[in-house]
Length: 241
Length: 328
Image (cartoon, rainbow over all chains, first blue to last red):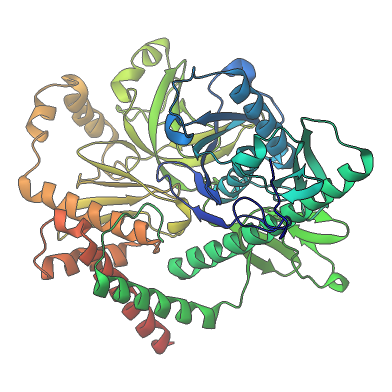
């Protein structure tokens, strides 16, 4: 199948190095400490953060740092064909783990000893790149909850189809079976916290694809930063003196 | 646009709300010069003077970097970031309102919107009989007669213990169980630490407690039993009479709250809800002003949560802040 047509346009009309439109909103769950909705094109994810709060299971308590937990789920209505899935399948367990590890790496857990932070992410619309969208949403929700972090974590995917590196794959491109590289970075520190790929790719092409994904992450980071800053300013001026 | 606010505003209301918020923004920008930061923003500091890094900051490659979203505050050499939406950070002496979640040996555990549960020891509160003495095993067994699970309690922050747990104390008659009223939970950054957190709103017959942890209590006024003046024996007799029947006649007689007071409680609670939803600072002055505003507009209690009233409150707040800046 042709994923990039001769004019250099992809199936949804983007250029190979173009991202989908980003949209995010902070504070969507009123009872949560922090929450956010993050959209990348048609992929839409909601995240809610509770905590730092008292550890529910005392045996998990760590004396010098916080416990971070994460639960990923996919709404039944999120995909094209409505499927009744068991609640904890392998895929969601894996993504929960990935998100937990990525977020734990940037949260300053030692500042909140003997407490627990719960991150709940749910996919509302799946159109490829749910993993990245979940991480971005979780970052926003954590920042909204006022949890101290080393840096923002942002994530973006890139792929390689028709011998062209493509940024931010959608569902159709994702299911083409080509390589899909999901990268998560700490933009300020310029470090990689997440790197996943489920196919083979020659070393030199891999590097260009990964570089592309990193560029995507940086674009997401700029967007998130602006949004958080605007939100903070709003809160501050409304509060008054 | 605003957290937790699902209002169906019509076109004019939307415009009015926006213009009111714009006014607020322009008023604050005069006083506060862009000190807001997001996570991982570099905070400009003058290194020659030496820098003390406070809360919400960390050092990264020789730069001071924010770790939370908030407002940069500078006190001499100290630079810190005051987080806005975060959980409560206790300070010794804070007056807080909490909910009992567990009765444990010699202590109660309270949920106070902190990263851990707070502990109120049996020994750090005045017993109903008011005598200073060692707590016996009987006292321990009778703990549920003082506070049960899910009771709302007012106390003071005593400090952190060596093991890092937060301890509370309630060594005065003004602290203790709160009943016949409403508990509201708002974001702690909207409550300012002040001299006075207990307020008796005389005209409504209502007590208002603005807990530093963002728990706000609105309840029927209870006459404070000031035990400092009362003679020791006299008081214990009186207390015995009170606690003698424990849930007896005395309680029953008091359990009725008049309709008028109930309405006042709801009105005040709704005023707090409106203010916190709009993200305005919650103080007694503002609350009473909003309550008066709602009654002068002849609004029913439930109408206070309608779209129109939110807009009116925002406009009023803009007006209030404008006049207060003029005075200065």
